[in-house]
Length: 79
Image (tube, rainbow, N blue to C red; front, side, top):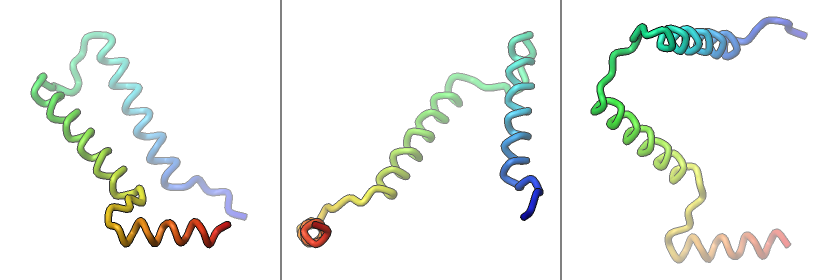
């Protein structure tokens, strides 16, 4: 059995450390990441677009009549 730390664990730890340092510096008035309101607004819009796009892609959305009929047949077959 391997006892090594995974790359994902190391990456998450480094990102958490950076976030904590950034928060601490911000609390003491040091602006580490210069942003303006337009950049924040653009980022939120991009984040919303990305999340909704991912959700629409991930979910099984049966839009066409044929797809809905196939899903109904699959559900009948599962019973």
